[in-house]
Length: 426
Image (tube, rainbow, N blue to C red; front, side):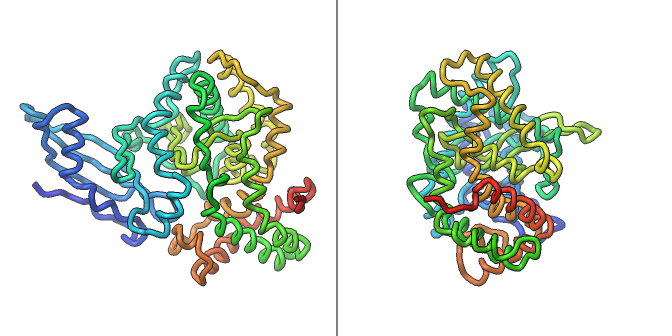
């Protein structure tokens, strides 16, 4: 049998990450034999191609697999469609950083153990809906996860450069609020099962991503210096914050005993959900993906991250208060539906908690948002983000040359400053 690999059309092969070498006919045949409980099952055709290109995912490699197979005694082949998610296994530098965050371990635990339990809880509510993709297999040997290919059900990635309008945003917040509520209930029923997850993008164990955030804030200072609408006043403030950015951000992640804590997604933005549309291009459904940085933290982590990476200009500038109210209602309704016995914040209490964690909005606006709006992907890889060499500096300057990103920075730096968020306090 010949394994067929579809050629990449329309874009250069260098724009994509290669599939793992171990992902082949023999591997998938053995896996399907086990999952289908059929030792005689045979793979007849295999199609492997990249699922994401550079600039769409900096933290992992996604591979799309279509496999045709024949069961024992059958004549008609069946088909399976899967996504295989793997780490940057061939780069020791990147692997070392991600191992410090327990990224693979966390996500494998999420897909194998936690997400099915959260799904079961939501299924038992008065308004059940699907939040996550179904898992086929978690491979601890290869640090890989194989789950259903949502493209088969016509789920697609949204346009990260356009961002979400109000309708998309409401759907994303509804799904997120239900995940947060179910997680709080799960940890209440199984104490400690989620609180052990404490390796989010900012945490008390590693600062492996520190150079990225510090360098991006430094580049923000350089941009402010030369921007007529900002100037050295803001440049000096950002330079003073560089050494404190990791501590201030980590404080947002520290769970507080007198606040509402839950399992946050940890990397909630446009490219970490998949959408299904009607023929009129109306959003019908949304599925959450990518759980490498999930941690037990404040919902401020997800909300500020989402608001400052994923919303269209008018929604981001003018709708955040109303969106928090919308999220709060879904959260509270779901918690009550699941008979949660813990602390349920009032809207005012949640608003104050989010305000306390608003430094997250600062660092996301100055660092993550620029990367996510970048449309120049030749050097869009993790090494360019993390290393302070000529290539990395050039990439950061390129990111800050994006006019749309500049508009956000020019708008929000004064807003943050008026709230005292750009001041070094301790």
